[in-house]
Image 1 (cartoon, rainbow, N blue to C red):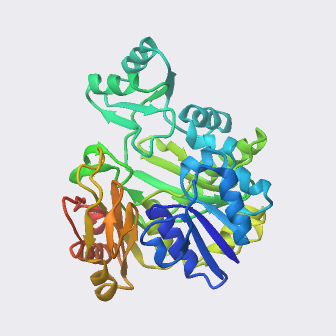
Image 2 (cartoon, rainbow, N blue to C red):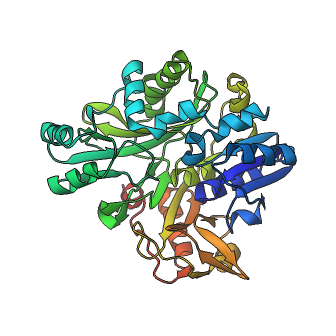
Image 3 (cartoon, one colour):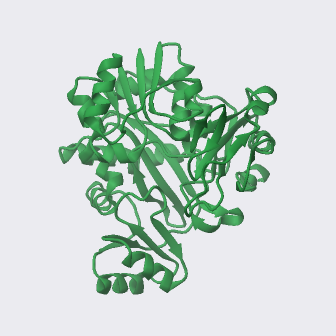
Length: 416
C-alpha cells in the first residue's frame, strides 16, 4: 500500500523508518517531513493543520493509509477530514483527541472510567489557583490545560514559580504530586480492541540528574528491567481499556494511538496524563524493538479490525535514544547551525545505531538545525548497557555548534 505520514519530527522519522522497512509498503510519503525523512520518503509541502489540504494530498497520491503523527493536527481535526474523504487514517477524531488537547477533559474521562489518577482542581481565576496550590502544597504540579508541546507542565517546590505559571495559562489544572518512577505505555486501538506496546521511560528535564526545565523529552529507553512483569496487563485492565470503553460510551470513539503517562506510586499505578499520539522520544525506542511489520497493524486500527491482528512480535534487544538539542533549548533555540558527522555514523555505527532527524532541514548540500530538538540518536544492543554505549558513541561523532544532550539517559537502569 501507499502510506502518507503527517509531521516532521523525530517521531515521524521513526514511523517512516519502520514503514520503509515494511514489505507491504510500496510507496512512502511524508508531509512536510525533514532532511532525514527525505532519505526514506518522498516529501510534500503542505500545511499539516489544514485537514482539507491533507485529504487532497492523500487523494492525489492514492494513499491507502494516512498516519497523523503530531498532536496539533489531531486536535485540529485533520483525521476527520481524511476519513471524510474515504481514506483509512491512523489517528483519533478531533473530539477524541481532546483527551490530549484538554487536561480537564482527560480528568473528566478518567473520572467516568474509574481510572486511577492524581486528585486535581481545574482553575480559571487567581483565587482558585491560590486555593488549589494551598490545598496540595509542595511539590506543586501545574499544567496548562491546552497543548503546549510537552512544555506546559511545571513541577516545583517554589510557590512563586508555580503561581506565575498558573497565572500565565487561560485555564490550568493543579494536582497532587505523584511519587515514584514514571513509565510511558503506548496502546494501538480501533475504538474497541486495545493492543498495548512495550513500556518505555523518557527523560523530561533538560539536564543530567533530572535538573533544569521541562522539555519535550531528552531521551528514552526500553525495556524497563525494574518494572513488574505484570505492569502492561494491569495498565490494560485498569487504565487503557476502561478509557477506550468510556470514550466509546460517550459517542466519541478513540481510534489511533493512546499514550498513557504513568507514575508507579507507593499507592499503585496512577495516570499522569494521556496523549493522543505516539510519544517523542519514546517512539524511537519502542519501534526499534518492534519486529511485527508496522503498516498492517496501523491499518487494522484504522479499519476497525484490530481484533484480527496477530500478537505483536518483539525483538529481545534493548534500545536507547539520546536527543541532541540546539543551543538554548528549551527556551528560544538557535537554528541554522551546520550538522556534521551523520555520514560517519551511517558508515561506522549502522545498523546498531542510527540518527532520526527532528528539527533539521537542507541548506544546499548541508544539513542544518531547524528546531529545539535536532536529532534523536538511537541504538540497540543485547542489553541496555550495550545499547547505551552504542548510542553515546554515535552522539560523540555529531558536531553541532552549541548543542547539548544529557549524559545519563538509561544509566541507572543499565547499572542496576
